[in-house]
Image (tube, rainbow, N blue to C red):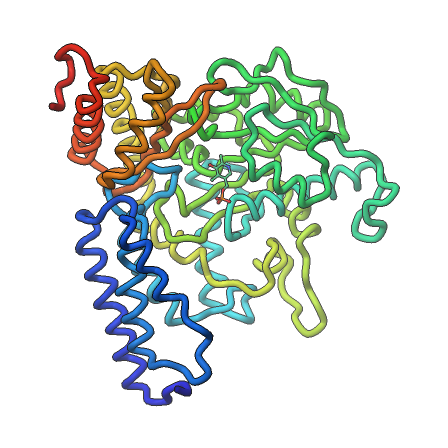
Length: 467
Ligand SMILES: *Cc1c(COP(=O)(O)O)cnc(C)c1O
């Protein structure tokens, strides 16, 4: 079937997709957290040969819903504790729907005045709510990973420029060495960004961490003007923060570039209660932060933030005679040339939540994480982190039970959470990041876990209040 030129058909199709999307959302609280094997098996329906002549649009959407929806992970629901996936706020999802109808290429003012101006406001608000230097450049990229590549490329280019090397013209062959210091617990995607940029993993200098997973400033490797150091706000297991105050000023004095991976943890800046965890983080040189995780906006939406706007603009410039734009156009600040207007949903989330709303979202998840941690502790779990943020890290006294119990709970499908390894032993990692998760959801999670403990006879005594 060729594209149907009838505008009525287009609107009907949009309405049909919307009807199905609404039905999906209406049932999100009753869905399994992870699809059952039958729903996954049924995905083979998509294994069709590439059609020679197209199927109908309505049939295509019906198929997507019939076989796709049942095999989704209900991370947009209240009972999902995997990673820091985040749900999507209603206002962000609604803004996204409208932006899809606009179909803007958000590369520059010429391509979309609306996207350009709205994203500029979102960028300003991001700097305000995270309280980062107001003149920083902000690029809306696909992910913290991609934004990390942009930040670290700017960092290397700048460090090399300071020693008289023009990487744009001369490339890397024969360039002075740039050292990279990372935490022992650096996120895997920061390593990936570094690899993509040509830094060898064996060549990284590793900073040892303390028992909470924070870089130990007493054992910080030497820093100098040819070094970039990657710190983190929000370690994936413990949710802990590197001690910025003890490191950042030292690093800057030495002339090093300080990059902060704050994919989810940087949102602690929005909370008065948590802010001290991030003291001095604003004195770094660059930051990455996701909106699609803790701010609960749709995928994909992340930010690369660089204090020296010219450093990011220099590294990412892609102006051409046929496509000249302001130096701070998005296409001149990030990896993509053409891209969707991903900052619009972020603008909508910030506008509708306001400062207070973001603070409440963050604080509430931290409160619920502490409740969950205490509940698990009462059942006999060993608590492995301080739960200073939205991460709960626990294990049972014996490793086999830690693994087996999770497998059983996951198979039952009421809740989902990840497995990790902490200090050499298996652990459960539960992350709180969906705006739909509330006290009732925590009660459900504790009762699901308590029931399984009981079934397996692991639970002794009668201190389990959830049976
Ligand atoms: C998720 C995460 C990343 C990567 O973010 P993406 O947006 O998934 O690329 C980096 N660092 C930390 C600490 C994370 O939690």
